[in-house]
Length: 170
Image 1 (cartoon, rainbow, N blue to C red):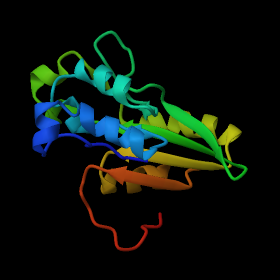
Image 2: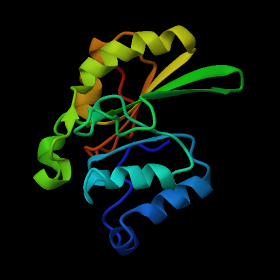
Image 3: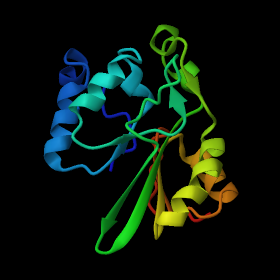
Image 4: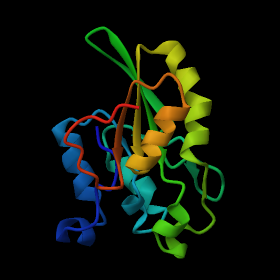
């Protein structure tokens, strides 16, 4: 799994706008990923190219283009591992309008991750043994969501670059 911000920061990623990164992730066998703010560094229309290159679902439940189409392949993905049904929900930071240039986000919309989680976690829980949030919202927002939304078993988060030497229990 990957919690976003796969692109930007390396010459290969900058020159080829992140596409080789998603090719490599596909070859490595990623099961799912979510989008981070840096996936929008080349403008929101480019996210569709990244999705096309990725050989795995890019999940997003709370952000959409100006026409209301989700940036993710779907909001969540359910798969079975060793007989355990795992539902993974993808969430992006509500701060997107301030995390990329205005032109890269122009006309797009984002719903607060907490609102999206409250809406979808109960639905996912009905068909899964384990519910995982794959987020790009930061560790503080992850903790707030965990404390406010029952039914979440695990959050794999990105964005704040916070090193967690031990799991955070909420």
